[in-house]
Length: 418
Ligand code: ADP
Ligand code: ASP
Ligand code: MG
Image (tube, rainbow, N blue to C red; front, side, top):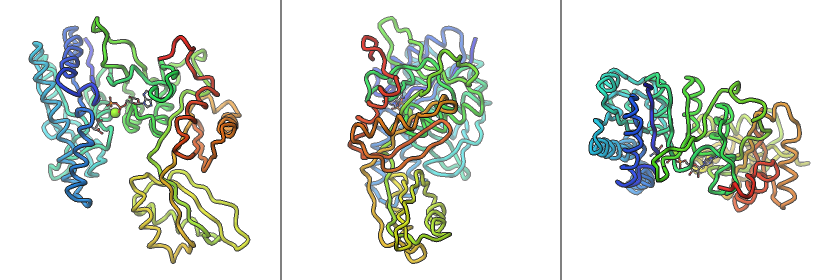
């Protein structure tokens, strides 16, 4: 007998037919004698719809009420899955975030899970009742409902697995594992049988949305065994093995590649401050106020000084924060002393990730040469120990990912293409 958390994403929960398929997958594990908690997402598209309602109601909506609205998608699917399970003879009940409870910080719309009370859950599992838990939601001080940020059901599942000391956390989605890049962009992307926590964390943080970044960080910290696999089963109802997220020691040298994956992110915006005085403290005057406004700056480039004693500073911020960033900088204009602000949202960040980079030179050079040979201009660069990212014009995103995938030898053989 094992304790398993099974998480199903939006596409897997999109409609009653799909929910029935999910119920049958859960039934298989339950009939095998396992203790099961299921974490569900809202139906695909539902959270977007709810977010739009809030925006329509007021552009300055109260984030506490936003959380009440957007968490409702998961309430619906958790109840529906419990009904579907009961209908196939599996005892089940739903537990909303506040009922368990799942305690979170009060950072509405991006709350962090603090503590999960598993007493009721343990009793339920001991009685062989499947617990169905809505992902993405929790409860903060004052008993206010919170949500965990977009894609947050992955984090709910991993946190649940850690709290329950589950043997496995299986994340069922609409692809059958983690690929070398988004298989919807590169059909010749290859499925990885294993990927390290560290690489998955880096891939998720630079745009591979197959797992929410926080869920990977939490799994790494708590040592949760995560598997990504598809809920779309064949005729026989059997699930195909997916991708395991593992510690580095579990990957043998034969399997190790120089580059593990490539990701892209269209959620950043580029800002350039033109003619910033070239003197000590000038950069601090720009990034201090942005930090105080809670805006994360990602890539930064400071250009060569003009003969006039000034310099241009370019950086990126999350696209959603651009209006606030521009407003913050405008208010600081006199202190910073720049001539003008230019911004561009038609940019994309392309990143290559791999632990092999630690011991091999030339990864960045290959990236620059490959993009250059296709006439793709690089607007900014950042690196970490296991990642190189470049900012390019958004129109070239798909082309850039494809040519880099080939350049690093990641393409699947022709006959094995997905
Ligand atoms: P869910 O609703 O199940 O949480 P998501 O849409 O959040 O699913 O994540 C799954 C999607 O992630 C896939 O459909 C795929 O397009 C995308 N994706 C991006 N990068 C990768 C990658 N490297 N491997 C697999 N899928 C990826
Ligand atoms: N439904 C939420 C979202 O769309 C959470 C999730 O699916 O993980 O962001
Ligand atoms: Mg997701």
